[in-house]
Length: 358
Ligand code: SF4
Image: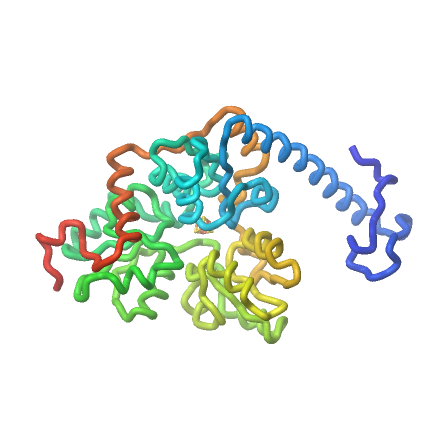
């Protein structure tokens, strides 16, 4: 335990320029309490992180963390990235044990990429509400109403939905995927209506949308963009394409999380406004210590993404649970949609011979 009287607060901690050391007697009590609580948490986190690293090495495991994970979880990961980058990384590395810190569909995608590996999701209940808005059964019913349509699923979807789809896409590559679809084919886009709508604007292809959206990005409003412009004149505003179209229309750039990291590195701007889940700011700040990153809204927190705490990562490595498995036939069918995304050439429905383009 830290003794309150032993806390020395440097001026840097308080954001002051001088003096270099603060007289503790002049600092308000609540501030001292929160500082010491922070130090205790940091010390506890450091201890758990040490245990995690030791167990990771003993088990010859790799830890993957999505860009939206808690900062202290990102800090112990071997790789941070978006869901597809992580699934590919999980398949590429030699380790047979993968601790996937993200939400359920991401761990599933990782298991589909690496059927011979063991994939652990520290908190099995960390689902994605948007992915869960579409089920395999309900998608099959929609397909029956639109024979001959190409079904495009956003990677943020369950294995069941991927298995029912002709091609998968990421937010970074959705435009390229839609451009590859045979002209004249109807397109069903599932489950994110905002990403689908944004891609439709860029490609001119009409789509049949699923009534789904990310409940976190859907909270963004044009007023957030207007307020950020007023508060940070000249700062570029990046938003994720899961945002409502009225917000994307006002942003300077509409980017996936990976694209935000690249553009932030390349940008000459000293301040950048970020319109996506707040977890990404940790990575951006680490990679660009000379730049300032401001959230477009403080409410962009995905509670599901924050469920994989350090103690749960430690528990997963201790018990080697919970394991995420995808049944073999389902995994093979879902893999087809992912392979089509990586392949070249025109995209048609899987059973295109029976269903000509309209
Ligand atoms: S941020 Fe949105 S899309 Fe991502 S996991 Fe959370 S609910 Fe799902």
